Length: 145
Image (tube, rainbow, N blue to C red; front, side, top):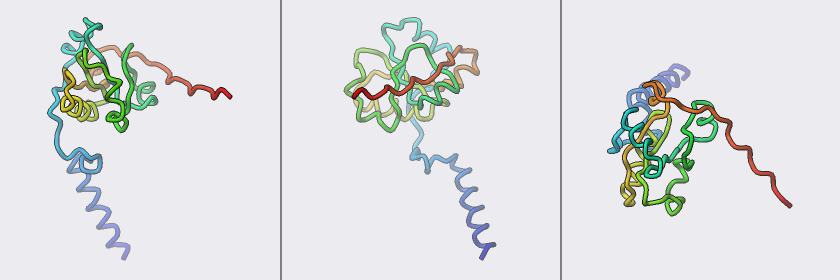
């Protein structure tokens, strides 16, 4: 019985590794979004009045890995509920650590009529020589009673 369980676990782990975890993450289809290079993002950021960075990462990911000086933070699971809060008069760049979540968010936003330039991975941007800010996540507001 133990041997059978070990074989089943090994098979499951192998299948997960071969798919890159995509099925478990709900990402069976690859994103259609363009993954922006450091140069492309830097060019967009040279006109901050025209662009909106939409960061889909959790606050702890931003504080650990670093982020951009100005961004709108909406986690991917909450994105559809907050579409009305995202301005349609700006070019949007979606941000995640390696552009996976950012690509899925870019696809969703494009399907809803937003002007999306593409997706960027913050860690990929930094590895290419881009500068990220290390910052502390905001503390929860104290309840006023």
